[in-house]
Image (tube, rainbow, N blue to C red; front, side, top):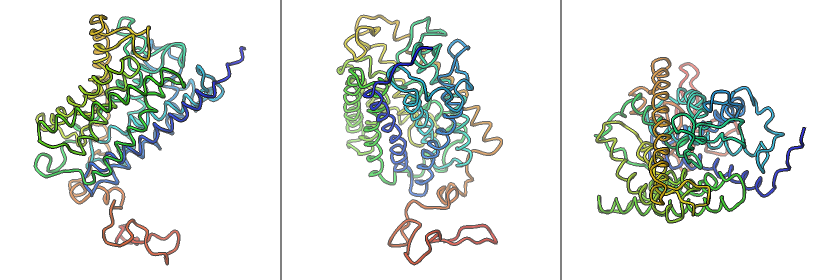
Length: 459
């Protein structure tokens, strides 16, 4: 057997650093989402992101990696979940210029945040146990197959490639561009969020009671962490410390900057104010939109992608009130719509002057005709429909069996207390939190005691 090539140390270091950046995005998302909900549900909202690091980290090692990148005998639809079960054969492999373990590490953090993104659509009203079960089922049935379609391309990680990347199914052999997961992650999560929002129904008081963000400082901090980590998301997808990574980095900056300005201008013209929530939301909209496009557009194209995404998403977040669905934190308006904008604009703006270079199939505005636009639309539409239908079915079954939505009483009184027996802010003592007083034992709950007769936690 031929000796596998030695990994490049620079490429390996960059990919591992990028993986850490993307993992940091999930706590950033927890802060972003946590600040947007009301005080009584901030911990539950953050826990819905955090738990995905636990559940998806486990299932990825067991079967998720193999389902995404294992041997494919299905024509590009799904990898064999037992081919690399427990990462068998991965740790001693080399993929391109990086170790197999580095590639697996980079890909798992994408899976984690894809699941966490969905939670914003059902804030304030989901049972934590059911959500935890949902993360495993959804990743297995929806995310891993979709990631296989986009990321498992020939000659790198799988011995046959996914149909989006390789142009299978109805794309007639002409692959759709999705450099870092606009379809597999953002359109996928956005459609799933819409499905779950419909399954669980509206929050009590939706459209009537004020449901303003309780802490915009957390929102802006979370958006900043997401922007920081997203350079690992997009530039890391080059899987090496190279010119492609650098070009993706520049385009990520360009689009995100333009999207923030685009969102704020819409706010100013529509409402008369520039808001911090709008700035943070514009940042995320730009990051979402440039994710699929960052390797195949020029910096000018990236500015266009960002500006359009910022403006369109700023308008799209109001659709939930017009159409009557309660997407609590605008997962549909930002991630689904932003993902669609970025994926479709590739068909207009893809250029040989992009980081990918001369191999790029150019878009309509660069003389490439309508072919790439049609391919991009086909891929986006299929992932959106697939995710919505399958997610709705998963949510419906869970709701009818173990129950997905909390009781009205728990929702009104506060899901943090009902699901976690905690509060995000303890205004009743000087020191805050659930630990106070140095005279207590190291393992004794400080501000509470347990009533063993009734099994209730009392302050």
